[in-house]
Image (cartoon, rainbow, N blue to C red; front, side, top):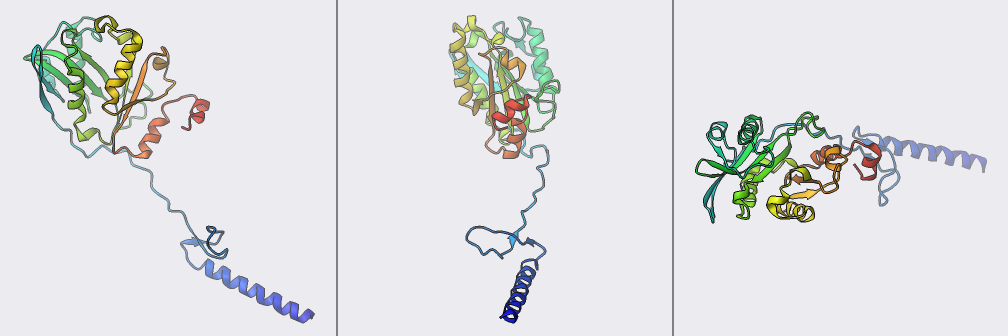
Length: 274
């Protein structure tokens, strides 16, 4: 009886050694517990290791767009990527005042500076040689949290303004259409802020709540959505807007990297899943 048990034990050990040998025969597998429907002695494939996404410039070329909008004040010509040479010759309409503090020369210099920047894009609304509306798109400043990582796929819509003399004519919508009818932004993330101290409540004839809703409604039609952040300039006033546009081809990796910038407070970031 004892001899039979000893013989059985030797056979069991031999069978186990053969199974382990078969399981470890491939350099691409490790022995272990597989999925529920497999046998315990079946090898488990090693996880594939993927290289991190490289930070590269988009291969999509910038697309030049022009359009003519019929308004009650006549035709307004719209153009993106307006060159410095053209901006320099323009007269700024007197109704453009919110960002320049009623200084037309200052406003023109600011737009020329944006146009000179790498990745800068100035979208203009012109009536002959007079600037009646504009949008400025650029990469975030290195002084801000958004610009410190220097991500080549992260952009900021820094300003949008329509002259008081040309409002309620569809110029803001038309400029945004010209701006985003451009495949260059398909794999980009873009942010924009709406600070209450820049809002022309008097000229618009709206209170702060209605003006805020107007901004959200306008930008949401072009892919922007509200996001939370603890950036001090945004949190200074609960009515301030922080909106983000994710291009249709933005990778999840890029979204994760951007999301990591939203909160500097580690506890807040953890609570929100970033």
